[in-house]
Length: 80
Image (tube, rainbow, N blue to C red; front, side, top):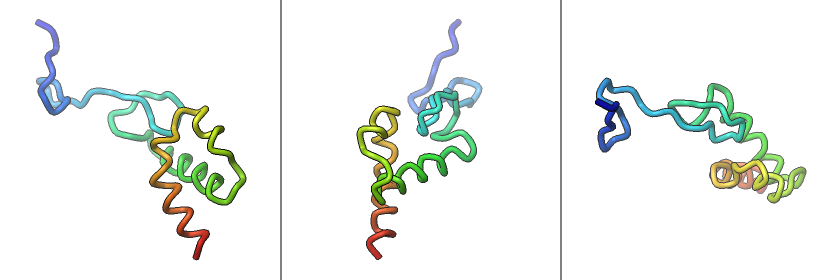
């Protein structure tokens, strides 16, 4: 019998399914980020907010949709 999944994304043993890290590194993770990689994405969002990085570069990494909340936070920080 195959390892069937429940509606919440867990298998019968309660383990969550693996996905890809949202920072763009491509590592398999059980959550959104590998440890410390959320800071890497936040750093990229800060560079975007202060003009050191272009949005097209962020989109090329495939992480633009994950960076947006961090970008808004950094943008508010630079506006203050």
